[in-house]
Image (tube, rainbow, N blue to C red; front, side, top):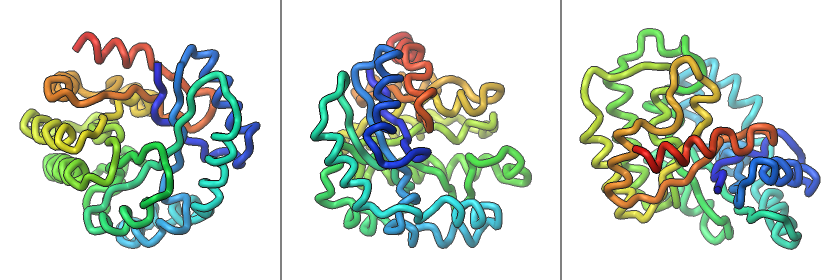
Length: 260
């Protein structure tokens, strides 16, 4: 089994830190882990976030605490070190990149020839709104509009052909908000474009772990069915941000894929 979305951001770039994730993965009977960082952690990606910081004082303060604290070259050095070691499971390294249509060329250039195993494109901001930070930020938000723009952006992400996969494709649901209209046509369009671009979809338990009262485990069943029908590869993942969460509900996610 695979845990294809594990963040290493809470520790130093050492083999000891990586081994903590490996040891937990072995405990959870995983065969493979995919480690990554959020792109905003690196100073090279900071220019992409001017508009989201301008939109929200909360995001501006959060961003300037968390962002731009690393250099991409240091991450690449860690990857090279890990690849020179032997581990009981397979390890891949990548980046989770916030998708902004206007920064497609910027993203492609920054990641070109960097020898990552995978690039995961994710929607974390919709028209500069940070939808997944706090439930109270949704007060006054037009849910129908934000859903529409979220899936339009997701389809653009798939069309960009920059990424190997799309992260948590319906994470917009995390606080329990639902649009007044059916999402089936958006699901079909997204699945079609992912298939055309040979991209995988991230079947992710992180939203349910964060918001167990309002979010279901993994993707919506109808979205899963449509992705399977279009032969889109689906990778199970925990979205862990610490070793203890590695492998969280991976078996259940796998069952959802098989039984939907």
